[in-house]
Length: 321
Image (cartoon, rainbow, N blue to C red; front, side):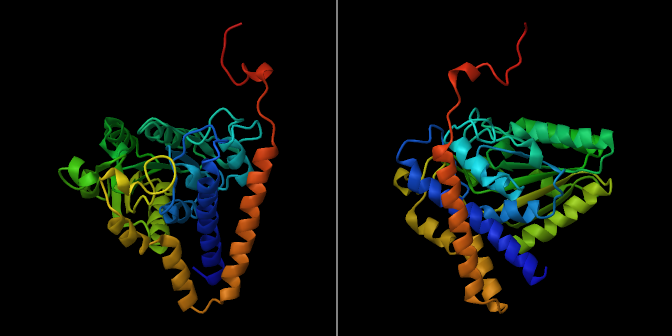
C-alpha cells in the first residue's frame, strides 16, 4: 500500500468512528427513535475488507451495521437520516439503525435477527455465480451468530456449490453479555477445513493491514472461482451491546479490560504507524477537520429532513389488490 492509499484507509476508519461518537453525543436527546448498536473499535474490519471490493460486489450485514455501510460507500447523510427515521434515509425511514439497505452501493440489507444476513449473503453469491457477473459476496456477522445453525448450513451449501462468498466473523468476544469462552467448547471448526475446500484465517481484526491482506487473498480466490472463505477477525466491542457508553457496571466485564483493549484501538495503531512512516501531523489534522465537517453536516441534514407522511404508510409494501 502506498501512502495515498493508507491515508484513504485512515480517513475511512476515522469517519466511521466520528459518526459513532456523534451518535453518542446525540442519542440521549431521544430524537433517534431506533435502537443503536455502535461499531466503535471494529472499524478496521469493515474498512480493510471493503477496500478490496468493487462497487457491484455484495455485502450483507447485521445489527451493528453502520461501519459496513459507510465502508462500502454508503452516503453519510442517508445514514444519519435513517437513524432519525426521516424519509431521506437510506431505508426511507422504515428501517432505523438495524435495517439499513442501499442497493446503489450493493448493500442489500442488515438484519436484527442473529445470523439473519448469513443465508441472504450466501444467496447473493449463488446469484453471482449463476449470472457469471464476476461479483463476490461478503457476509459480516458476530460471534453470537457463529453459534447459529444457519451459518453451518450456509457454509456447507457454499462449499457444495463453490460459491464466491467470504464469511467474516467479527469476534468481539461478547454475545450481548456472554463471553465466547463460556459458549465455545473449541475454537471455530471452520478454521480447520482443507484450504482447497474452505480457505480460512484467524487474524488480528484491529490491524487493518492484516485485514486488508487476508481479505484480498479470500476475495481474489472467490473471484477466480475457487469457492468460499472464512475469516475470523479478533476484535473488541468498546461499548455495550446496545445504546451508548461502556457497560462495565453490569458486571460481566470491568473497566480494566476495556482500558486494555482501548490500548489496541485500530485507528490509533494505524495513525501511529503512519506517523512513524513519515506522514506529517498536518495531514491528520486536515483529515480530522474534513471528517468533523462531514459529520456535522450529516446530522444537520437528518434533523432538517422530513418525516414520512401518514399517507405513505403503505408505500414499499407487497400487497394484493
